[in-house]
Length: 102
Image (cartoon, rainbow, N blue to C red; front, side):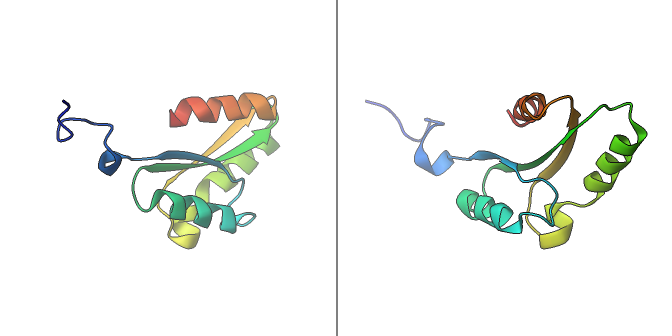
């Protein structure tokens, strides 16, 4: 016998965490709307963007700063967090975003 009122894994307590590798907000808005529809205003959505390059490169740093300013929240009103990662490879950047989002 289990008490569902105390069970944190009950379906009514489900809060999905979504990591969406969406790139810049103006490139894939449909993907962001799909992620927002899947989570139905519950849980956390992280919109990730990976820039391949060296953080010490001024051009890469400027591109990162430009992309960090524009988010899905400001562009389309979709609730979530926006994060731009600079990494040596796309795989390394994705790994960093996965650690960030849990």
